[in-house]
Length: 246
Image 1: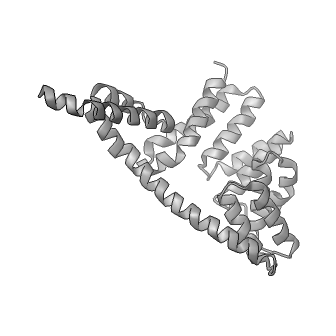
Image 2 (image 1 turned 180 degrees about the vertical axis):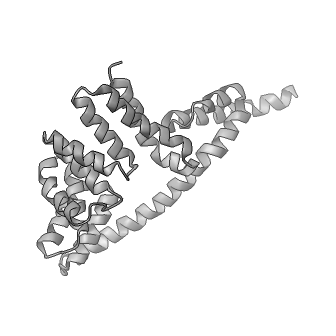
Image 3 (image 1 turned 135 degrees about the horizontal axis):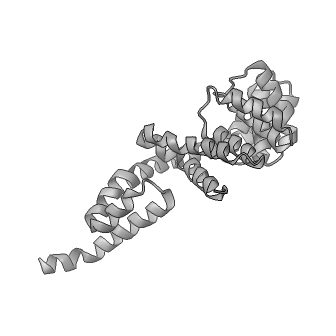
């Protein structure tokens, strides 16, 4: 038995180290760290199978999609040099946005709109890019155009982004009214946290705390795959709450 333990000892340490690193990066439920530490290699193995393995599967799928997106981007970049159809620029903008290339996406949506696009999506996405790039003022006309036509566009995210743009440009009354309208139906963590930020900026700490806690409260009813997807928002909510005065 002693010989067996000595053979597997380094691998057990490696398993625990991998589990702890993944836990620190992903921040799943706190009880996992106790399972990893107190059950040793067995606990680490259980953790990696339950929490890390689905992440690896998700990352492999994302990697494949990312490769496909980048290939399509190169094709569209070449195509739009000879064919300036608005649909090509709309698709290129969507792909840039999915890859996180917001300035390039915004420029592509500009070309689609200037080329005569009449659909709401390029206006919505151009406005979203501007907000996410920290330029809320130019986002407002685009998002107002979308919300005026379809208030519930993209599951009310358009309303939430427009409310955030209003808040960032000092139009706080308009922002609050639109946030309250959006949150009657929307449960998006992004909208909740942006509303919480507005309330905190006005010194309404208790209300801000309530909206940030709503983000964390959602985790209890979520299936595991959704919790993994929402973890960045859970971390942002926790960090936001930690900064609020008691």
